[in-house]
Image (cartoon, rainbow, N blue to C red; front, side, top):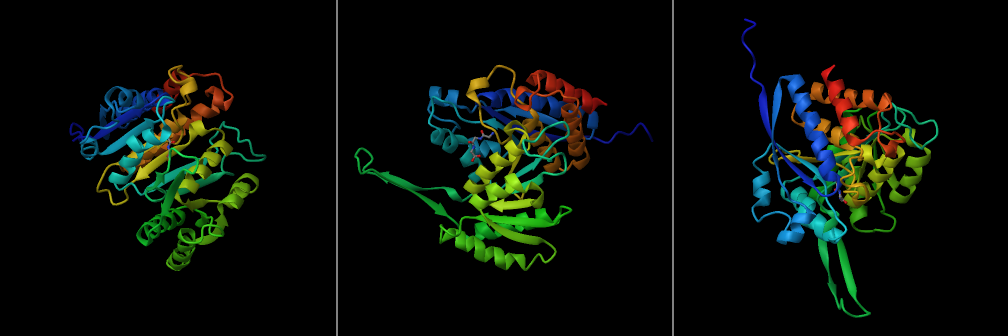
Length: 361
Ligand code: GGG
């Protein structure tokens, strides 16, 4: 009978707004997610906010409490704003907050989709919606971000510092399998693997070797290999030749900033830090940083935050709602309701309200 209502599922989401515009865009993302849930009627969100930030670090001497990582494990997903503030060295903030979360919660994949959204102009010639449509799969647990190394004779003119990249067969195989599955799920079934194996003759050569092995398991996926320097040229001059891209932690971090700029602005780019085993909660965050110069002014671009929210909804199993949110975002950009970084004149609040209105339609 029509009086019987299916109960909606309640997801516990922990938000960590962090620093600078992370606070502005997390507030905007929460508003959009609440609206999406209300309209969908099939899921709800229960938000809990953690005040872990550089400001709190300066007051308390730590970003997360000792049991912080265990606290996060109790949630269905983590929504992260941004970290970094001029008063705290960046390596302290990254290693105090975001990197331990990725490492402890098994988030060995970072997925960074890029495409030119409707109404957004790419700086590339003849590159409209559909022409630039990439997914960058970033290895998120090892490589140049392994945190292994040290400093000695630091006070002297002969100071020495080492930063050791660590690559493991387990780590490489699992990121390749994820990247191949991603490529296979997309219409063009195309994967480009990026290294610097001409100069980095150990870890990067292992990447090459394992890539050749795993390619044999995916005969339906077309593959090629690029050196990271040449890749920046190909992304800029031949964007239509690329689809899914897999690269190391550092290389993919750099390439995804370039990708975001080529698709219109770093402010629109999303990312998902995934634990593909689903043992632990995954974390969703726009790729941009805390942008201290515009923090608190209400002018930050919330599109990367909304797109990250859409990827969170998708990860939680609601594909239709995620697609609906993406359509709402693109209707808004197409209507020229955009922030200054996209040559628009709207503020964060106006863009947020416009997306919420689109969701209601
Ligand atoms: N919202 C992402 C953020 O705050 N990123 C800061 C950053 O520099 N992250 C480095 C990284 O993702 O490796």
